[in-house]
Length: 289
Image 1 (cartoon, rainbow, N blue to C red):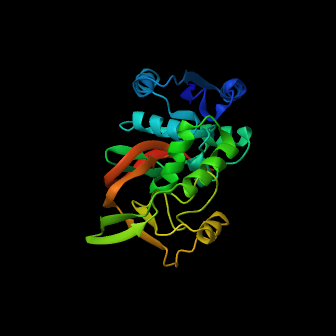
Image 2: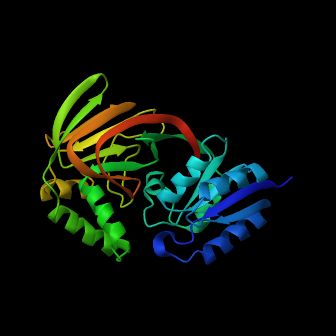
């Protein structure tokens, strides 16, 4: 008996045409004797439509082609169901794919997404919103906000916004953090709420992070001068530096002394003063190499 697979594709993610990718997925499914149902996201009521498709076809897996935002949306739609998610990286932000060490070719990723084993992966809940990868408050969220408002995409779009975000960044904020039955106060330029290790660029921000350990890390960057940024970008994250504090926990609150820009998995979420954060342990199954 053929197994059912739902293929969810974001047709506009990464500003890439997906017609060849859809053809490749359909050919792979036919060759390997899967029944494939293709769903292209439209940006409205996608979660409800995917949930309805799941109840109609009861698939063993849902294969997702898109960036972190699309993967997160499907994971939220499947929150109450026991289903494996396979990933075909196809977004402008593929941070989770980078962290999972997914290979560069579509042929290899098809095998993993459709056929490989899986891990049970944590998610993070922040003010009621889900995060699968990396969220942050401060300088990088400024970059995400500027990037969303810009017409320039791709590497140079990110590079320009990174320069602007650093050049125009506001004064450091004071963060009062409660975690592990302790309350501390830090002056910060940026705080990362990390379920994993790397940004989509491959930059390691949380060297000891694991996506299935029931914990997340708060990476507090007190300073962001060019020397520190250079070390981070070149893979030499100075975790013993006085400019960096890392707190590992399963729940925390962050309060800032003024509203600071905040983003979840590459999506700008406004300026915030209060964040309530907790882990959702083993929340989803993800196919891995």
